[in-house]
Image (cartoon, rainbow, N blue to C red):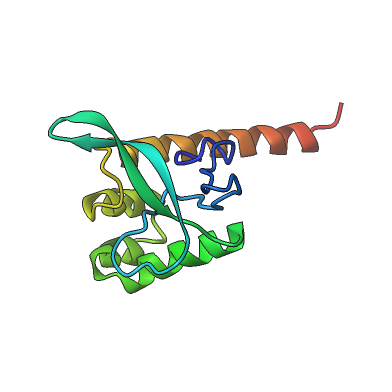
Length: 132
């Protein structure tokens, strides 16, 4: 939701096709797959700056999900986040501590989105189960 505006702003590859990158995962390290270059906001030296960066591209959204899970499970820096997977707010705080995102408010923004989703789920449950 945060990285792509609820899927409305998935970055495009040079040929205009979708990168299917739902999580803003950059094409760093040993990434050998396709890439999409995009302008991104990064928090550097106490302020947000615009940068061009290479991001991973996938054949499908399913591949994007699989790669996120693989990245988190196979990278030691995310160990504390993975260990907190059953505690969502702690999980996102651990992701932030591990450097998943440069935004110092990343964890609180994700937590706010989760709270909004819970309130929408509650509203939908009431709306669909209440007899008039």
